[in-house]
Image 1 (tube, rainbow, N blue to C red):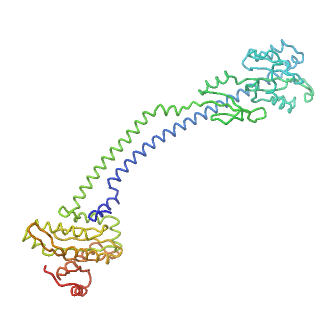
Image 2 (image 1 turned 180 degrees about the horizontal axis):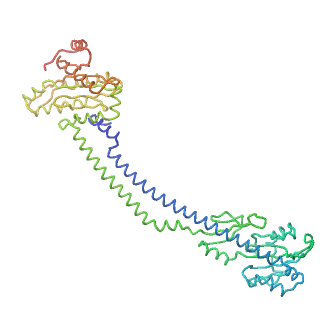
Image 3 (image 1 turned 180 degrees about the vertical axis):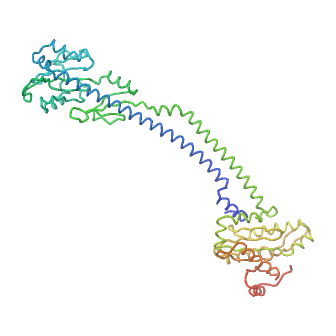
Length: 476
């Protein structure tokens, strides 16, 4: 609970956002948010750069694989759809076959292997750029069978070349299969024709060439059934279905950049946070100093209660204004009896002591949500906030009167200092000035009548009735 002396002022300051703890928290939160935005932005941008780089590399690798397959397909068709090629195979001219076909594998980079099958599907010639195959019988046709099966589904007269990714002795490569077809052959739909296979392998040298171009590492080809990797591209067989995937380790440019700039970035973030923390502490201290100055300006130095300036500030608080407008308030106006005589006979020190004791008694009588104000001299008001202001004001005024029964001890004597109380009850829409005027009138009515009870603002006959009912007059 807030102290009754300061609750209205503190409430008003919180409502306008000048509480020192709020200012400190706002600036500290600003620093945290600023650092968070910077770091998250850098992480997002560098991650995005990694993604764009990966997509670019994937496009390049896919283009290289597609170009390799297409090149083998075109070159194989160019070699096989040729009258001389057909005549050399039929004549089994080994020298002519080597000079016109086989040299494409052994002396150029168009093929790694060229394989020729006779019309019965038997391997009769193999030309290998590495020279590792000793004879046609050493060539394993198992990886080529899907291409041959696909080729059998086509019509020879259409000059179809089947291409895609396959394996040769467990090594993946771009493979093309087509019939060796002359231009002059009639009834080619039914004629058995020899077949040429053009092969360009994805050996270690080929993968290294891709790696050098894309600046990636760890290029390898794995079967399609293996767990998918990222990044990777699918390699399609002769029927268009994936048979393998080309995987590699991506060169993460964004991550490398982030690692490079992170020390400087952290230094910037620490500096920003430090500046916000310094500003928060500075404004926190300034706000506390301002609060202290406002408290001094709004507090009565003698009694510690709110003064008129503090009352004006409390009245500007939105919640206080709302309660007054709703009529949920009562004003108890108090004036000490015989205060001038006390000052004249015993001096201002005793007068000040009487004011301090009165302030303490008023603080003890009100509730935490109520306010006590010293208007000046020996005049005080208590602002009682309640949805039933009449009952609350009566209870508070009774406690005030009870507290004033006891004598006040001074340096050399003690004295009972009585008070006159006037009470005015708020009404919906009733202006503060009117409410204060009514309380003032009620107090003067009690003072003129020398009453020992609180006088509520009402008709004169009601005041006289209260005087006769509740007590005898007292000396002013």
